[in-house]
Length: 566
Ligand code: LR7
Ligand code: MN
Image (tube, rainbow, N blue to C red):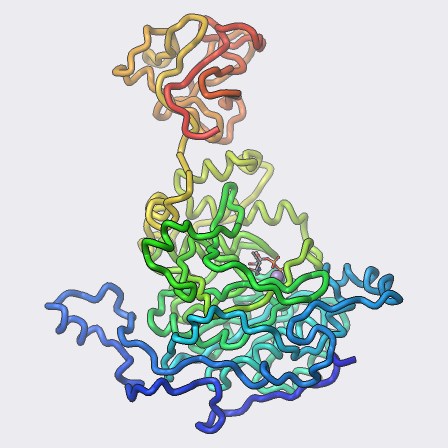
């Protein structure tokens, strides 16, 4: 089997002769010229502080070209070579099917494919014009894994060894998050001991990917941390463009284009250009194509960096000292999920940037299910992580998170999100901007009204409006100028005027007013609208009292002046 033979490894200190990676661009600019100093900026800009003291202003001098290992693969006739789809022979189909659950992808096929197979160079042609500096920072590549499949873990490692300039690759750190599979013990130690600069950190207890990454970062010696999932294939020239951006500005956190390695046939599939990472409520990650208008206006080339409101999470490079400046991840996040949102909001709100670099491409096996166990319930783990993120970073917008299916998390007796003091203090200390600023400036396309409806609350039966007199409710002739007739209908279904909310104590009693409290179910009102004009509130009666719902009664139909969202 091709996959199990030890491939050739090209890894040694860089020498001039051994640099097919970097091609001189003709210019004679020295490395020192490339370093931008604060003082020189000030003197050439009339004493004005630079926008970012770490930003470099000169361009690089080298082109990034393909490595020969990619162009001339060992064993050209092997299965899956060149990133082609592989086929399971008819008589092996049952075996392939039975092994699927080992990794929730075609584990059988992966094992047939060389661990150092070649894949197509999918970089946009315009990347050929891109140049990088010859004094880029070094990086530590960190793979954390739990019970990863042998062949994919090795293919991930070999793709880094074979396609990274040795002088930029400080080391590869494998963090074993307390795996139980036998092949990840002595067998892995033995294999890794033959590889240059690859080390294993073993965690005694299962930590989850967030704290496992931190264990890797803690021992990393490179200038930049590069995190990767443990089932990837780095493409030619993937590393230099990432390091170049970090070198230009250490507050840039950069991601490769994440391409698809098919879970079924292991083929390497190129993805569309101009994709960026976004989220939808309730903090669900997704991809979206940049608006055509924006591409045209900015005259963007397909090789230009793409600013992303959020990152996918698994594949990125970040300056090591900047990572620590940002307080790394919230260490209270468990196992899987939410950490991509946390670090994304933190980066943008606290002065950094997230970019996808189209000239850097890495394939990833997207799996339908997590192939490992969650120590606690999966759903509960992920939602608790997200609630931590919402509580620290979302300000008044956290109601949108809870309002989109997570109201139950507000019941503090049922869910313990843990202590958030440290996270909130960090946000304070870094003087991070508000979530509102983030939405307006980084993700303006996001439709995120803080309330669902507002204005006067018109009753179709009395043809009057709700009004707050002292601390009790009454009907008044509608008047937009009267502030006591203005209410908000929130994402958590509260009908509120400042700090007071309508409460439904019991059927037959009048509607009372109580201090607003998102955790109290008796303050929540169901307000459905099949179309925006006609509205039916569950239980407000004609004397502003609570009654049995009577869907046909006009006295139970209500209408707000403005609707922002359904
Ligand atoms: O307890 C764990 N300990 C671990 O070490 C759980 C996982 N892990 C390892 C695991 O072996 C793997 O190498 O952590 C890595 C990521 O886990 P995956 O591959 O199960 O995650 P994913 O690819 O399904 O999910 C994406 O979202 C995650 C949210 O926590 C992480 O940020 C993943 O890194 C991230 N993956 C990507 O961004 C790749 C592109 C996917 C997309 C979109
Ligand atoms: Mn993954």
